[in-house]
Image 1 (spheres, each protein chain N blue to C red):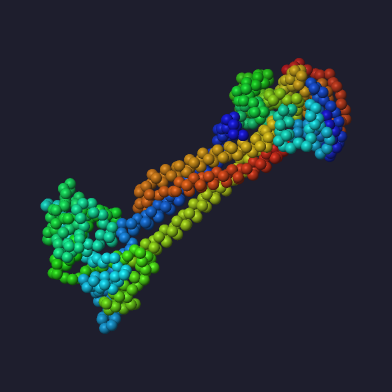
Image 2 (cartoon, helix red, strand yellow):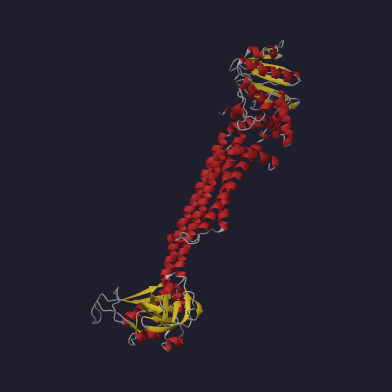
Length: 409
Length: 221
């Protein structure tokens, strides 16, 4: 049944029945191609979702002050809430079992100069622990440390692109730059996966910023890093009690939507993951449907092929073909075509996915890929189902009396 | 060769000797095609015995029938029944394929029979490129390729004009001259008289079984 001779016979049949070969091959190749692409794109989408967060820590709250929208405890409405250094200390003190670090964040935009080069950058005044929140990666030199903050040092850590813009090929370390009229020594250069904007930033100690601004103790925003081991539920509880604490301290009505806002990165991450999960389920369902449609398609074609060949099979039977030989030749032919085209569709799909890479990043698809095992499984499934679908009509055809088949025109 | 009792054939009993050229005649509905199909194991008889070359042909399953057909019988059909996507040579070689004869030898043997029917030059043409007479000659070559005990021809000239019919009959006569046993179903009197024996069927029974003086087809060609 699998002799070299029967293969030759099958190749001849395939060669001389191009339409039929094309139809069944195309169905299978297309089915697999779409399946692989869909699964790959869904995975690419998931990658993008993951990437939204992987340049920042997820165990973080960003606390933004706002303007109250309702009167509370004798205070008027429309009051600007401000945080100061005592709030940083209070959070650390009251929530010590949750808190890993607390950092203020004061953003100022201004002209930065080095020799003849100058440009506008955002200078972000933070404490040394802010590095964890942004997952800042130090390329050379070092990040701010506790001593810098304590001594209100005029040190700056600049982004990779700031160095490139201002220094060209020169090494920025230990050079002095002018930030809005104050001179800072560059102690480090960083990179960040968050993109170009984040690499055009300058970090300085918040205490230094406060000193420059008439020795104020105000801070813009507060970043709280909590211990990762408290988990999602712990984070949600901490979020709630931190909100209550701050509202009480700052006299903001519990019902006021505008007085204060806590951005819970972990909560956002969870929701994001859920969204990505739902997308994955939808994508998976469509991909499964495609395989199903492919199976139905190949089954249809097999029925058609056998029907079309009824007379030929009758002739072959009259010439001495056994039922086994008839079934064997139909199955071998169809399995050969579906295997070749299935593998072709699979490889083409995977090639397309790997070719895409980052090219579709604007459409939220990053590095689409498919698990090789899944791709092979789908291909084999389609081939096996095609063979089963071919077997049923082939068996019927092999049992048909030659004389009936011969009359079939 | 057998006896039958059914709706179409109602008791038929005859024996054909090796080397005979028998015509089975009858108007349409006389049961001649049914008889031939039973003899060819293409169709099954409800009852009766059929012995071919000393082998009782009964209780056949599909596989066994296929092997017997391949070994004992060669078919020549009115509508040629060539496989349209295979060349003349490949068509002739097909019964040998089912005998599991190696490809090289198949080609050689098939070519020999094609030469015998005078179509060596047409070996690599598709059936669609051949005339009706040529197609039937390819079919005859194919029927002979497996070297069967009996050739069964069902209205072999039915689709051909008279000149071509005589050419085909001439070929059949020559094959018979070599000692092959041939049964020809026909409703044409002149074709029947080119055989050596005529069995007349009517309403499913043998009306007349006569030996005749063979008219050589070559004189018309």
